[in-house]
Image (cartoon, rainbow, N blue to C red; front, side, top):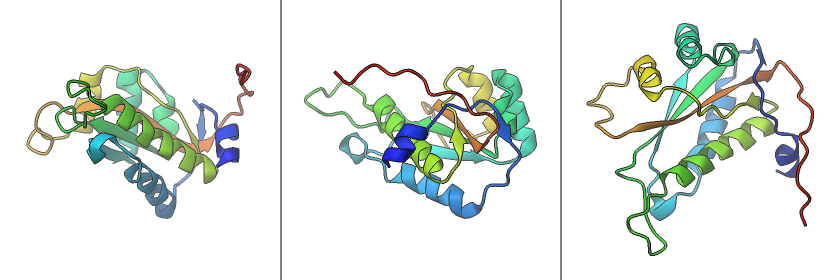
Length: 166
């Protein structure tokens, strides 16, 4: 775990690679096991493997690396089912819950020798249109919280300076 935390980098260039189903399953299982407020598990993971769909995501987000990745996991969150707690019933923990699940996937992918990039800068409506999730499957309110491209790194960025622990 410590090695995965230390070696994880944000990668925006990927090499061609067909991800084994076992690796994808481990990554999704890591997210499934993530903790969430009141155990609400307010997430849904859409795995995008189709090259045309990845290219369309790259086009609507202007992030070419989405088309290069082996897979893109779209992480959706449901504000209506997100837990609240800590004595703050009006506060939704959705962003925290989803962030923990995504980070679980990032660390699992890193442990498997794969690279990732948290992508949260996009027009949500355009991404939803590309994902083509029918309203009857996900009725109202679901938000695209992150896109997570995963694959073999096509670059080796330097280690970023970190503040001292003190």
